[in-house]
Image 1 (cartoon, rainbow, N blue to C red):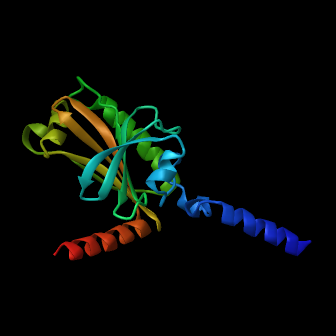
Image 2 (cartoon, rainbow, N blue to C red):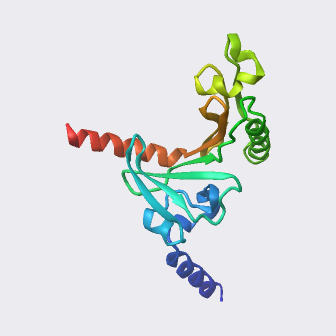
Image 3 (cartoon, rainbow, N blue to C red):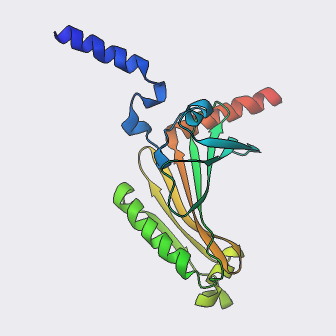
Length: 200
């Protein structure tokens, strides 16, 4: 009986896609899976639109994601040069007419709390710019001009995560989340070097 059960378990494992065999370690944000291919992501009903070559390999804007954040404006998925999902960037919906950044700061604090509960305490970098950028009414303007920086870095044995505030103009800000899988990042760097070596 034990041999039969072991055989059934083996057959079940072989029938699963490689990236899903250890779902707990492969689970990525938004209900995605680290290391999944473009085709595997699309098979889940996610719509992918390529945005061209980037510093991180092939990249696609992803829509129709079942577990998207409630105020998510866009998600960009990066597959490197070997068709394996290794990097995810999530941009929050812009908060306009808010030069103080009250709305985006509130959302940033909320997301920071959720991420801290899941991944542990981050290394915070909250720095106001000098001169007028120390004044609350110029918070978003400072972020936009690079005078003010507001982000938190989280790290686990498997992931690096950054939560940051960015701005599109002096009164419109949004949050940005960047997830990178460490092991897959190493694979990306290796494939990048091989690609460049072949081009020289």
